[in-house]
Structures are given as C-alpha cells and as structure tokens.
Image (cartoon, rainbow, N blue to C red; front, side, top):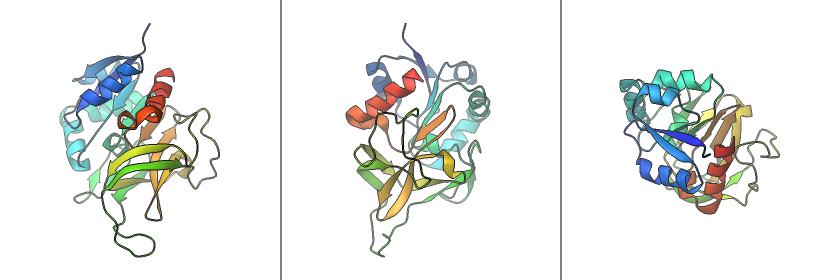
Length: 216
C-alpha cells in the first residue's frame, strides 16, 4: 500500500514538479485545497516559491495558517520546502516586517550582498551547493531527513534571497556556504522538517531525501 502524501495548495507554488517527485518515489499524492484535507493528512508537505509576505497572506486567507500549527503538534511528519520552510519562523524582513507561523523560533533575513571579504556577490543565491554540518556540533545526519547524505559532498539546488536564522541552534540540520557566510539550509525538530533548497529539483540525492520523508 502506497504512503499518502498531502501537498498544500495555497497558490504559491507550481505543485506539478513536487507531486511528480513524490509519485516517482512511490507515494500517493493528494492535493489539499481546503483546511480539512490538510489537517487530516497522513504526512503534510508545504512547498513554496516567491515572497514571504505573499505566502503568509495566502495561508491566512485560506485558513491554512492555523491548520499547519495544529497539524505539527499531532507529531505527524511535516515537510516545508523553500518558502514553506521560512514561514515556520516567527517573522521575516522581506519587504518590511511580516509575522510568520511562529512554530520555530527565529527570523528570516536577507542574504548578505557582500562576501566576508567585502566583495559584491550575487543575490539571490541560485544554483547547486553542497550541504554542510551546521556550527552546532552536529556530526551525523543518521536518523534525520538527511540520512545517508555526506557532509560537503551532497549538492542541492537553491534559489533564494532570504535565509532563516533559527534562534534554537539545535534545530539547525544543515548549512550551505555562500560567499563565506553560513546560511541555514535545513531544519528539523522532531516531526517538523524543512529545507531551504528544492529536493524535487536536486537530482538523485534530492529524491533520496523525498524517499526518506516518505518512510518517516
């Protein structure tokens, strides 16, 4: 029997690529267009592209903001992707200040436009970069969403101008190095998992992450 994965449709993501990736990995995909379908999910995925304020506005307009908060406390597996990760935090400074879902403590702030050496760097951070162990003494991804990946050898596809800064460093699952800055690339707290990168666009290793989530 296939594992059922529910994708949240709140108008801020082309769900086709995400759905295809999960289907390729053997899951049955359900698209949630209403709060009840989302809350009753076996496993819930919230993708997202675009701006944080627009994403929060749509989540609130459709009644998905409270549903996500209620869902995660049931300890069922939850995965946020890109902006779907950022909205888990308390607030963002993209286009002003916008409150987030406040499920995880921390903020979302702009990627520095200069390297640590003071040179100009391109923002958004776009393209392939390897995942790194974060600076919180985490030495293994075994038992996590990133199980089986190797530090500094597992490249993922990123497209973002803002990055989460978790207040609880223990939730920081992986970083990415950009211009000498360590940016948060993934978080995990118990059943709550999220990636700043796009696993559905990250080739074989991205699909391995999706398979790992399906089995959790």
